[in-house]
Length: 242
Image (cartoon, rainbow, N blue to C red):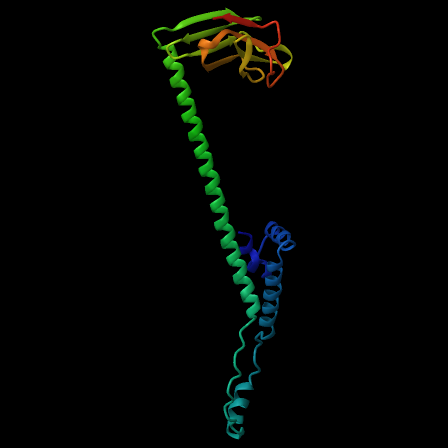
């Protein structure tokens, strides 16, 4: 952690990379700059009392002067003043803010993770339900299968069941449409086209479950701009009569 370099930096016990990293941090951190100033002041005061070798006669002079020195009444020590209470409160407040920030970040991360898990679970359940409906249609005793070629290669197959009043459209084109266009599936109901889904650019296969297939007279495949259209472009690439 960058704040662990505070003491070594003041004592010049860091390498060049650590020094450059911490000095870059100092430009952005008012708290650490204040700490550096205080520690440097403290280290300078420690140097004021540096020891030197005492002269040889010092001991004898002190012992001989003891008998002639008048004793002084003890002086009550001055009350010790709390050192920089505001500074201490600021440090405590900063530490508390860090704890709150970490706790808040953990809460946000937990919410995001739970939301991702929930959405993944919902997608899995939707896919399983769709697969079950497709299997039910394909296993129906009254299943009817029709297919037609797709312009440019491939086939479109429509499997329908009146018992389930549903069908499955299975597209397997030989290649993607040119010019970045896409395939789009349609059912024709009461002579009106109903969008059953547009494929993504470059996509050539699709399986779509369709409810109310008994109301459809045709299943069509058209070639459209990316994202699909509100009505099919003619001529159709395939048209399956039901």
